[in-house]
Length: 133
Image 1 (cartoon, one colour):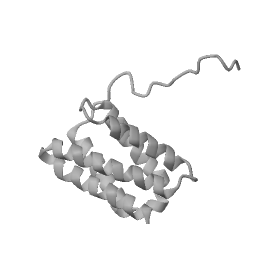
Image 2 (cartoon, helix red, strand yellow):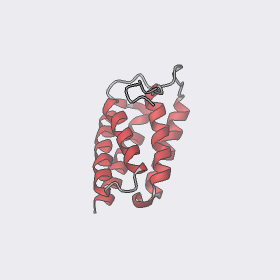
Image 3 (cartoon, one colour):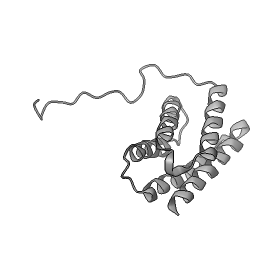
């Protein structure tokens, strides 16, 4: 293959935006909180990648502003979890940052999402703290 040939790129987002209902958002939040409270961070890589993929799809479809850093960090976290050699400390840093960013979104969300997003923020930070020990 010619090394100067253009590499085909897969579109990062679907051509037709995915519609996500409030019920689906709530279910995703509930599933993620259950996963974070039930799992030990040291052995949750494969399931963590599944959760990240679910969140990435939902966030890609969102028109909400201020999610760019979360989207970027989810991609980084997915890459880290896919590599068994990634130091736990690196994963812990991303989890803590995701927790902080989620707290910001929770403050702006209001309504029925503020409390679950705040809880998600706390769980992400807690998982990061567990890994950094």
